[in-house]
Image 1 (cartoon, rainbow, N blue to C red):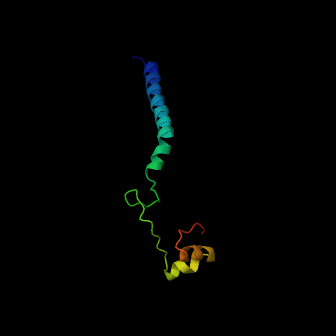
Image 2 (image 1 turned 60 degrees about the horizontal axis):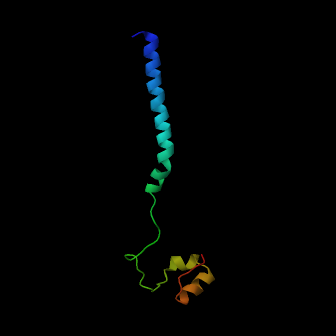
Image 3 (image 1 turned 180 degrees about the vertical axis):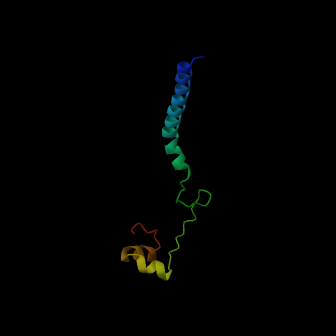
Length: 81
């Protein structure tokens, strides 16, 4: 096998490997980043017990708005920050 043919064969193999790696990273990158995310919704086996318990911790109380405190006092799940 002559030298030009070897160089062409090696460069073709390396080029196809690089192209495959780029295409694979592009296709799989969005799903790989989603795999590490977690859900922030807490469930009890898919059912809700229907009771809301407000957080009356002093540190929490300092940061919440009057509207949120009113919702908590009414027994509602707060919908305002």
